Amino acid sequence: MLPIPTRAALAAFAACVLTLALGITLTSAAAVSVAGAGFVGLALALAATMPLGRRLRRERLEFAWWLEHGTGRAAGAAIPGAPFEVRCYVRHRGAMNLDATGLEPIVPSAVKVERCPTAIRLAARTRTEFRLTLLAPAAGRLVLHGLALRLRGPLGFFETPLYFPNPLVIKVLPRAAAGRPRATAMRQPASTARAGRAVVRHRGGGTELHELRELVPGDPFKAIAWKASARRGRLMVKEVEEEIQQTRWILLDVSGTMRAGPPGRRKLDYAIEVAAAAATEAEAAGDRVGLITFDARVVTHLAAHEGKSQRLRIYDALLGATEIVDEDLTDIDEQALAELVARYVRQQDGVDFYRGHDGVDGPGLVDHVRRALGEMRPSERAAVRASSPMSQWLRRFCRARGLPLPHRADAGDHGKSLALADALQRVGGRSRSPTSILVCSDFDGVLDPSPIVAALRLVRAHRHRVTVLLPDAMSQAPPATEPLAQTLARVYARSEERRLRETRELLGRLGIPALVARRGESPHLVAARACRAALRRAA
Image (cartoon, rainbow, N blue to C red; front, side):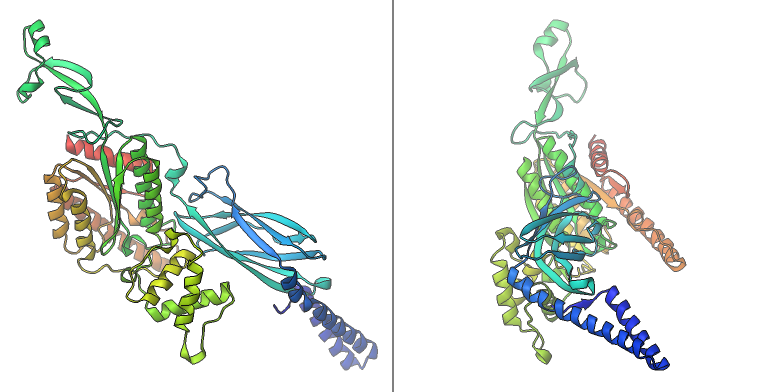
């Protein structure tokens, strides 16, 4: 930790150089003496600051931070767009007071640091606490890597840089986690495993009488209420209401076309909010809910269950969709991956695995990564898809430490079509118990929709209700300011409008409602609108 000069030191050095030049030019011994004294003073200040780094290592300064729980948080996590506080402390065991300046938390580039103290006083043998206020633009798993600061030496002419590597993982849950949802009833023609909160009305025996009415053509013979018919002298039919438990499925597109744009303005971010709102409403209604995410293949398949634990599992799966590291879904080779991890380890842990012209020491880097992952929770060490053990360990480390890998933009000519068709068949291709299916996808890059059409026809034949939600890319994108960007935005807007229109026409011919979701609409309202569209189509 070599000292670095402050602005005061640079100004003093410039003044000494100017004084020396004037003294030589004017042949003034006094000016030369003053300049020399200034240079000696700066040298003494540097010499006094040099031992500061060794003393800090000997006295062992400690740094820790954690998420502050309070208003706007959800189950120990943050939510997008709402500032959250991180409490920090630095423990100083030495006998001399220190002044720390230039505090800078090392956070992902998309995270905004709204409040951070510029300087703090580290009193001797005490623990100094302070707070940071951060803002995350979108749901995901946020990793704060550490805190950088500078310790001011004697006279304030030099500072010693210091970095505390201490990764802190914060879950940024969807906004639905912070609200109290209102259950949305979705009727089904038949009940499932047990009673729920959704009300279904049908003719015949049931739990609660709704009305008695005259028999009309089409009513089943077994629905006739014989005693009421005998009293009134004409055939009457009994209609009853019954509370049932339903099964809902959410199919979420996590491909590269959903990831374009800055965090918080991507179609994927909005689709995650809608999916979380739908899962929260399903829990409030007492229904089962499951989740499938797909890209060029099915990425996550979470079986349908009920209750708060299932909602939290869905939240975790949605957050996992933002940090995919599998080799077949990312666009980085093994050499570039090793260099990325080696740079991070050199900065974070102070261990250099670069071997000159030989590149990165792969076996040594993997051993270091394995030891680091051994201290993490089992959920953070989940297996990933990779072609070699080295790539698998490095990709697992990238996910645990929040190192983003470039996602593969193109899923292939038929990748998304086959993946969505596979997801539909898993949900409704084998089961004939009617369920509700919400598909969140932009259908961008679907060149051959025939596999999707065949799967949708099969699902509809099994009496499942399907609603498709199409995120509008233009409403999600930030406004263009440059003339060229505005021209490109108009061209892309026409292409986007044509694609949405063709997709809605295709789905309309299959009897499937397709809704366009635009930025600014409440995810809960969008989920409820999709529910009402499914009910109108079913009716």
